[in-house]
Image (cartoon, rainbow, N blue to C red):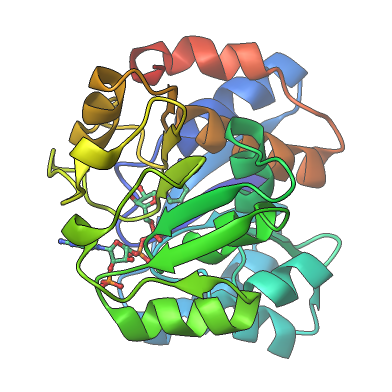
Length: 264
Ligand code: NDP
């Protein structure tokens, strides 16, 4: 039997076990995908070694360990891809090939892909933001964040523009797309944007999938904008991990059926 899991803190809210266990069954792979809660960062290296010695095939890594896991894996002699190096974070470990990959950028590219030279606004500079910026390299990106120093670091690293002013004062009319990469909306909080300046040609994307329409997406819908939430990103990043571990691309529709309540 093959063993997989989602490693992070918290993990119980994750839909990954639901999706991956359905994919394992449907693909005829004898395996199990579990929750792996790691409460303290000091235990992360120990857990990594245990998973390896317990013959795990692979794990997904979520908050708050997407950066820290890289150092641990590298110290253990794992190979990191160029993409992971550029993004600076990983969400997938393959214990068999001793490889560390990032499938968040792939997942995001399946929900939104800019045209060459598009102007896009990325709000947020946490764990997922660099993967989004990486996948939108073709665009002219403006990045902003509550903690400006974090946005500044990303803006420098990816050569993006920085918006360091008050979000509510930013004119949105020049953006082809606006991406919410913050956790604002998870508890139905709105992003303090000047929606009066939002135009209907601007595509609005939220990485959040629960609630399926955050106040940001609801406001955008009212303006007639095309909107997209994070459900398909979640599914596609998972599919790419599954493919890396098993060599099989799983059925996307199976996951869509399971998460139909979260599809927009
Ligand atoms: P992090 O915890 O690493 O980052 C959180 C981000 O949200 C930071 O930019 C933080 O700003 C900002 N933020 C949090 N609270 C507030 C607030 N009250 N006001 C303004 N900004 C705030 O999380 P991740 O980057 O990992 O995840 C971000 C979002 O992306 C989450 O909602 C998560 O659910 C979603 N996600 C979706 C995925 C999918 O597959 N659909 C995959 C991964 C993430 P600051 O730096 O100032 O703290």
